[in-house]
Image (tube, rainbow, N blue to C red; front, side, top):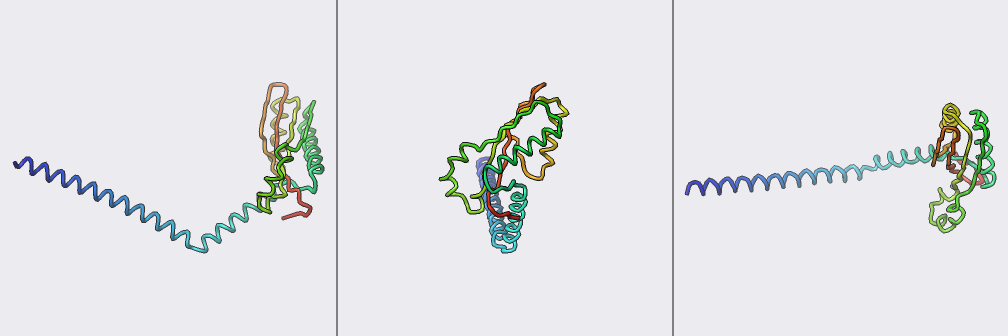
Amino acid sequence: MAAIVVILVLYALLEWRDYLGTQRSRYRQSLGQMARLQQQQRPDLWAMRASDAQAELLTARSALWRNVSAGQAQAEVRDWLTSLLRQADAKGSSVRVTEPEAAIDAASVQDRLPESLKSLRPLRARVEFNSDASVLLAVLAGMNDAEHRVVVDGLNAKPARTEMTLTFWFDLSATEKP
């Protein structure tokens, strides 16, 4: 009989411990939710986040290429890439700049974009050149040091020939934006 009472007391203690553990975890969850809500209610936090986002947007916009038309943008990219390849002493180079099909047929997508993004257009470039490691490194360093952003979508470096697929984002607005 005493053994049954001891077992029942131990069972009750284990149940009580489980109940207290559940209550503790609910309390911690509630504290976390309250802390998040208090942070969201602070207006200075939102203002700080907005100013950080605005600074990031300005930084991203300053890294964009700028032109008034897609034709001028293609010519500028072709000239810049040709100059870069010449500086890197790349032999047998070819540069082809095109506007992606998705950008040509994107009138419906453009209608859904915010006004601040409607003037952005991608251009793709396919670059091929005879290279060794030093030429490839010089080309990549030139792209890295460029004042505007260049995205390397594909790189196929074989011992004698390198092929690169690049994306350039242009702001095709008529007026310069800071």
